[in-house]
Image (cartoon, rainbow over all chains, first blue to last red; front, side, top):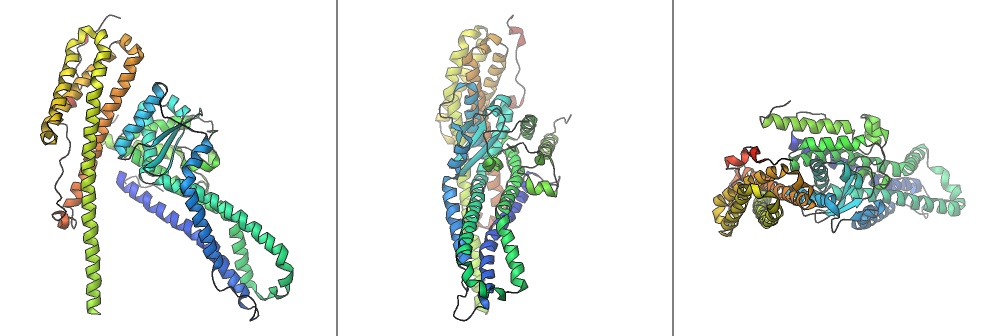
Length: 342
Length: 194
């Protein structure tokens, strides 16, 4: 994690990017193990079958699974942002109503200039709990959504920090990754369900006939088979964990980018404190979109802790740690400018 | 074996040359674009000021000089901007003068609660804050991009292709006017009796 306090803004960003890369490699490797691992087991299983019987030599499962996953991912990539926005019941701000919405539109436009990205489309979720998220496929097709609670609670500077955080996600293409990842988690669940049904169906129908030749595998095959079945059962959970790990580290990165755009890390720190202070869960944002938000919308206690268990299971890093890092940046900045650090 | 290694080396060097060249060209265009963005935001400010002045004119008869300073600075800035991008020095001077005139006006407006109470003013104030922020952020982006561009073309080994890519050091946008660094002075003796 970002335990090195001596890292500056850009080094921190670089470190976060590198870690994210390896998590993604892990995600892909998991798909490969499920598909090609199954092929290998089936290959071993049919190795000692009679000469004229079926031998599984070509990795059909691996290829088919990868293809199906690819197709689903592509579909999810195309429609992901719409699905996310639809699931939260957000409404788009086209003609701003009242001073608060005008301010939101202005702040988003300002931060788009600071980040050097086109203005994203702006959405409001009618929920009293302060929260915000970004989605989209690239800076040209991106969306930023805030809750009504955030608009009511935050000052202009704090709102700027939050929007800059979201545009950080947009600029470094987090939104593409996170939206696609949300969809990939869905895809794993879908493939898993489909495959389970398929295996049950074929096992019940054709199991009786081949029973006589089954006993030739030996203990190695059995162990492999058990490991593989356990993987299948755990697939949705593991996929979710990997997705969460990716999203958690990106929150630190987006905080750093927000500080870079606004040059005001203390404003985001104070906004996070306000968001943290409002205990209630964000009811309009469901589990599937949770990892896109600036703060855990489900209000889970796990988010408050650091450690192996929480690292593996929480969608968001501990708020206290994020605030501490931002304050550290703020004071470092003050010192450099020669201002009085009180 | 010998020629093969030589060929591989050649391919690697050529690949690096192309990447470094394209990287410099891309950064150069980004810098140019960032500079244009400042221009867009300055125009926006020029268009906004007449509205602002009209809104506060009636209520602020006794602050004529502040208001006139804004109008004058705005007209000067519009005139200099029309001269084109060659007059970069004058443009930044005129814009800096306008910035300080505007911030003086905004501080003065803060002194009149009855003026702030009307919805129109707070709306204009928000617009003005936003416009000033846009200009500041556009400059920040330009300076960041230009610094990146300058660093890239001066660093080894990219500096070897800098001449080929016609890379030149980009000037940073600096605050030259001392008045803008200073806290605006307000004449509180004109404060109305509430």
